[in-house]
Each structure stands twice: as C-alpha cells, then as structure tokens.
Image 1 (cartoon, one colour):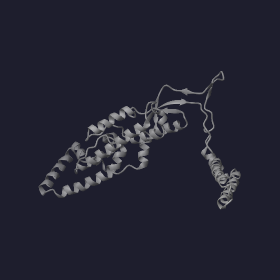
Image 2 (cartoon, rainbow, N blue to C red):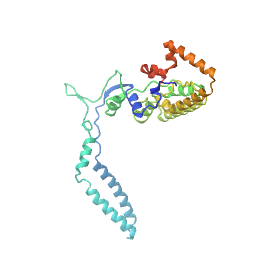
Image 3 (cartoon, one colour):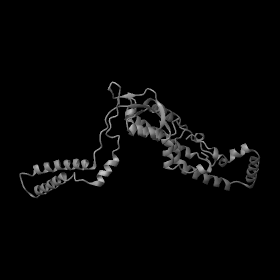
Image 4 (cartoon, rainbow, N blue to C red):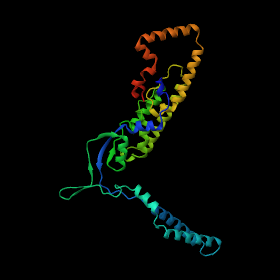
Length: 305
C-alpha cells in the first residue's frame, strides 16, 4: 500500500473512466441488415401524451354524463382544452426541429445491407474472427449493431461461483479478479445482456456479484483493523476498491507513523540515522527505503490495480 508521493491521492473519476474505456475487449464484427427505427420527435411525444390524457378524461366524462354537476362540467372543460392542444401540437417550432435534427444522425434511417453482383441482398454478415478493440469503440459499434461483444472468461455463472467460494473460504485473501471487474460487470448487466450466454441467468449473476462485493468490503475493513505504521497488504483489489479506501488508509498510516516516531528513544533515533546513512551508500537499499525515487518507473501492475 506504500505508493510514491504523487500517487497517494485519489484517482479522479475522469482518470478511472479513461483507464477503463481504453482497456481492450474482444468483439465479433457483424452486420445484421436490420433497419434502424426512427426516433420520435418532441412533437410526436407530446401528442402521444395528450392522446393518453384525452382517453382518461373521456372516461371521466362518460361516468358523470348522467348527472351534469360541477364534476361533469369540470371534466368536460378539461377535455375541450386537451382537444385544442392536440390539434395545435404540430405547429412548427424551429427550435424543436433543430434539436430533433441534431439527435437523429444519418444512420438512424439507413438500411445496412450489401448487394451482390447478382443483385441479391445480403442481410446478415458475420465475421468468424474475433478482434480486440478499446472498450469505448466497442460500445459505439455495439450501439450501431456492428459487433457482438464477447464476455470475459471470468464473467460466467460457473466462474463467479468459484470466486465466491474462494472469498468465503479464505478470510485473508482476495480472489484474483480483474482490476476493472466492477465496471465491466455493470456494463454487461445494464447494456450488453444480449451478448451473454443463452443459459446465463441475469438475476443469478447479479446476486453473485453483489455477494462477492460485500464479502470483499468486509475483508478490507477487517484488514484495516490490523493496520500498522509501515505495512498493509491487500492483494487483488480492483481499482475502484483501492480508490474507495485509499484516503482513509493513508491518513491513518501517516498518523501512526507520527505516533511511532514520538515513542522512539534517542538510541532508536541514532540507529535509524545510521541505517539511513548506509542506505545512501547503496542505491538498491536507497530505492527500497524511498519510494519517491522510483516514481518515474511506476507501473500500475506493480501494485495489483
């Protein structure tokens, strides 16, 4: 947990997003040839909503039609007002038209298909060779239905059960999950469900991930209880998990270092000074004692994130 000085702060959300979105992921390119559905304009959405209100008010008017009391007259006035709004919905509004044009790109109404020399239309083209591309590019191609994202080998019901069993049986160890497992799991559960295996149960996978998350959080809190001024080893934590506890752990360790220094005797201080002078003569030992000297050679993999 001892990091160079310039890395002892939290990662910004933008930095975490950059690291994860540039992580490579496997996809299988394909083109389904299906015509994209056109998005509803703001006027159409408003008209549909008014039509629903109109049906509701008509039912109320029918209920009170036998007795023309105040409730009947009020509902009748509401219905007349809604009818006027429905009829005036399609009045041209330049601002709304410009907004709709910006939302709808050239791909929304395009029929993706190939035509052979015999004028036969190829509706579905699928590549059998998977490729690795950055996650941000895979998300764009997936949205345009140009690829299928291959789930990671660890993101299966069977594999997650193995990780959960390991977490339960080893109270002081963490399962060797990828450093970005939390973000990738959320993406597949929320946006890429159709790319999961056919026999995968989304609710079961979601429950397994939640159990793993809670057990790992409990282990981190238990590890903090045995924290000292010089060392805390928590291997195989993900980037978000480290980022969550880093400020508290580093602040606590710094305070414990100050308490430890104040409790040292003059003899202990002299011995520490002698060891420090020896470390200056040996570059290898100096790097072992001073992490800031190796800040330029920092590698994220060295710290299991």
